[in-house]
Amino acid sequence: MRVLLVVADGMADRPIKELGWKTPLEAAEKEALNEIATMGVCGIMDPISPGVPPGSDTATLSILGYDPLKYYTGRGALEAIGWGLAVEKGDVCFRCNFATIDDDFTVLDRRAGRISTEEASKLAESLQKVRLSNGSVKFIFQNTIQHRATLILRGPHLSTAIGDSDPYETGKKVLEVKPLDNSPEASFTARVLNELLEKFHHVLRNHEVNRERIKRNLPPANIILCRGAGTIPNVKPLGEIYGIKSACIAVVSLIRGVCKIAGMNLLNVEGATGSLDTDYMAKAKVAVQALQENDLVVLHIKATDVASHDGNFYEKVKVIEKIDMMISYILDNIDHDDVYVTVTADHTTSCLTRKHEGDPVPVAIMGPYVRRDDVIEYNERSCARGGLGRIRGIDLMPILMNFIGKTKKFGA
Ligand SMILES: [Zn+2]
Figure (cartoon, protein in one colour):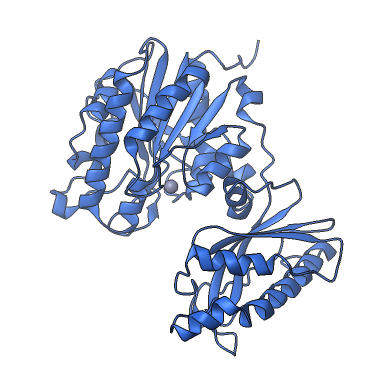
């Protein structure tokens, strides 16, 4: 037996006046989701704990069964792994932006006018040639999409206890990176990073790409801002904990990173974009196929969260209806005596506040031997009346693994 776990990012929401005080899930036409609720056992889930707005990274760790309060080590390393960079134990990773500053180091644009990926690649190529004065520390600098980039510091005596250089606001000065504790490692790491960022600035300031941008009246990408020093969480892979083979279908690098450290096989889907224009059916087909050879398949959809952050609840309703079609295809193409289909969200994203919120999310599990309850609609309020009651994010994986016979008895 096996599990398909569909995670729709930020799908849960709060009631919205324009939708007649319904949530987008309540307003959407969704036959397949309702079938899962009807045939399954339902509940609500606090991804972290009640009232705590989760990040997508901490929530995903939790849903995979890892207590984020114990294992979360920052976003930098997870994202770097998700981009396919070979992060090693002890590496200190940062999320970076190409940004624009004036001669006074005041930030004019934190995203350098959302510089194109092509231009950023050219700049990154030059930055990779920079050398640090301390030969024991190596670095990897990799641009990803547009202004975004990842920096990895590798070597002995490094620490994650250092601050950001990113002031997070325009009109503020770039910060000098400061050690956050009294250890020699922290001050050493801060020193190395300050040196590196200064050398980066010199390369960028005189770079041809930026001279061209200035000529075209575009903000030059003349500084790298760093934030969120982190390292790899020290978790046991799912394969070791439950003896399972697992795969993940996700585009967002952060989610891919979390799944990777959980030991999941990362599958690529042509046409999947991690945004509103993603190819839902292509993802569904890969999921159905992946279920042939895996005990657990996680299918992550980002579009619900994108619509929520845009505050576009009509779009969110449409996205949910597309997800419903995707699930309908899946239900038509799997063996119902063999697969437990679970649908949930990693957190609530409110279309009104446009932020992640601490409200619980609905969860429904359909499968051969679940204790069916009376819930017949998949949404935040209906699922709250279901047989699962109210669980935490870290409860979900043991529940699912127990259904497919992969958990060990606790006690004699
Ligand atoms: Zn999320």
